Length: 158
Image (cartoon, rainbow, N blue to C red):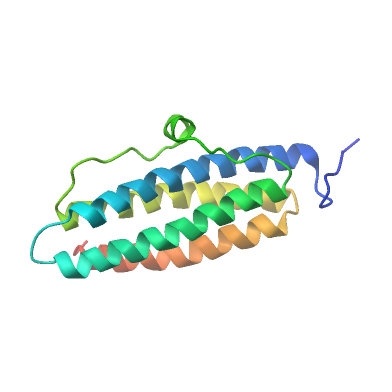
C-alpha cells in the first residue's frame, strides 16, 4: 500500500526526490560561495564586466537555493542547512583564491554542467512520481542553464 503525503504524492517517492534535491541544494550552496569569492577577488581588464556578472549569478543562485529548500519542505522533508553537510554531499568542489575571471567563469560552467546532469535525474524521478511541482522547477532550471552554458562558453571562446 502506498502512503500518500500531505500533497497527495507517494511518501517513498518524495523521500527519494528530497534526497536528490538535498544533493542539488548542496551543489548550489557550494557554487554560491564559490561565485561570491570570484566576485570579491576578481582582478584584471575585465573586472567591471565580470564583477557585475558574478553578482548577477550569485543573486540568482540565492533564489534557487531558497526554492530548492522550500520544495524539499513541501515534499515533507528537511533541507540540509549546514556547510559541513553541504561539503559532504556536494559534487561541486570548493574553489579558493581565484582572481582570474576566466578561471572563475570556467568553474561556473563546469558546476552548471554538473548540476544539469543531476537536475535531469531529478526530473526523471519526479516525472515517474507524478511530482509536477518538482518537474516544473527542474524544467525551468534546465532551460535557463542550457542558455547560460552556451552564452558563458561563447564568452570563453569554447
